[in-house]
Image: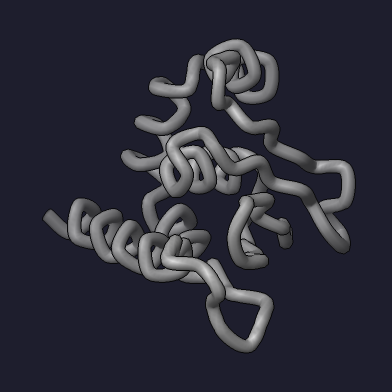
Length: 119
């Protein structure tokens, strides 16, 4: 599934196995600030921003547990899929115009997830 990361700086996309992986990845990546918009086969699959809360209710409705429970489950049992989602974060323009380097941050998270999985 492919998603646009909606943010005030540069245009990025991310791929994920499913909405659960995408939701956890974007929530970690942007601390709840970035929504996702599904594109292509994922059209209609969206993650809202959680600037003012609401994340627990949304995660419970979608995945049957609050954000912390779902994030922990993904980290513990789906770490490869989560790391691949972080690794797929791609800038959709020739160069960055912002100091906010979402792609570099995603790459760091991918390394951290893979390191935790092998520890």
